[in-house]
Image 1 (tube, one colour):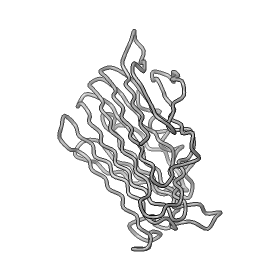
Image 2 (cartoon, helix red, strand yellow; image 1 turned 90 degrees about the vertical axis):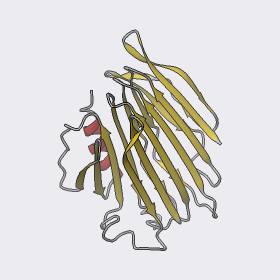
Image 3 (tube, rainbow, N blue to C red; image 1 turned 180 degrees about the vertical axis):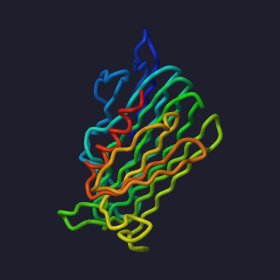
Image 4 (cartoon, rainbow, N blue to C red; image 1 turned 120 degrees about the horizontal axis):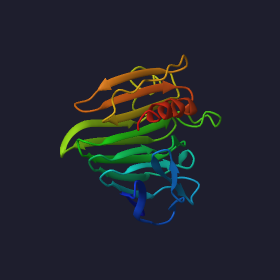
Amino acid sequence: MSRLFLKAEQRNGKTAVTDSFFTAPIKIAKPFYCGNYTEVMMMTASAGILEGDFYDIEVQVMEGAKFRLTGQSYTKIFKADEKGAVQKVKINVEKDASFIYFPTPVIPYGGSVFSSRTEVHLDRNCKFAMCDILSGGRKAMDEQFQFQSYRSGTAVYVDGKMQFLDNQRFIPCEINLKGMGFFEGYSHIGMMYIYGCENVVLPQSRTTETAVTRAAAGICIRIFSNSADEIVKQFRDVVSQIS
């Protein structure tokens, strides 16, 4: 198991990482200031996520803190036999705090197996945004939709009550993922959930398709594109509006 724990608190008008630890292959870069936010970049010493890996990530953002967690480069998931790899993320955001969770796009290699679960607990008086960007696979290696399975679940609770639930289950051998209801002919799909800052302006693009759904609390944005970079750019435009 590879573990990452981060705790961010407001100290003297700025956000500081007051507690942290990690185990290989996960590591973090030195925190830096980005506007009103303190940002930490998660990195791994491995070339990607391997068979049998288990990533356990926990983030606590305390009252009044403004914090961002990002990644270094695209997350590559390597070929697996049966077990595959697992990632678990737990996030707690207290009142008057802001947290942006912006992991890098995921690229599942041919034959890969991956399962991820993200559980978010929010105070009603906080701001939060997260994204999940998935590629269909390496086009240059003729591996699009050649992974075995990809599962990603997100559950968001506000004051202990579930307000948003998203489950993605992609198994290419069971259904045509290029078709209607899945990738819709595109090679990449992105999901962003936002809470506490719903009055954002969505960027316009002729090369993507965007849909917005209002959850019981917060909103969900989905983008289809043939470029992960295009989805990243649009999501960054959205989070730049969150103070």
